[in-house]
Image 1 (spheres, rainbow, N blue to C red):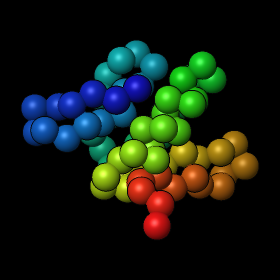
Image 2 (cartoon, rainbow, N blue to C red; image 1 turned 120 degrees about the horizontal axis):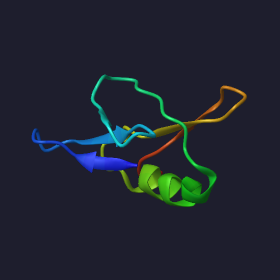
Image 3 (cartoon, one colour; image 1 turned 135 degrees about the vertical axis):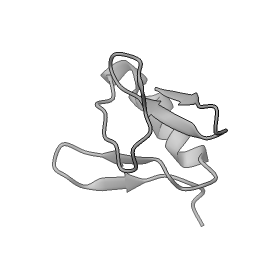
Length: 65
């Protein structure tokens, strides 16, 4: 779901495997990867991974205080 680009930052990949480098990019998360993506969001030191649920609510990532 994520890959580091030449700028040293990690970006989300779309269903075709292409890096999505535009800010605020959304891609669907395949159900079998949901736990791993949720874990990545929780461990992201930059608090920059969010999971948007079908109802539009956001699940923020990053270390919890």
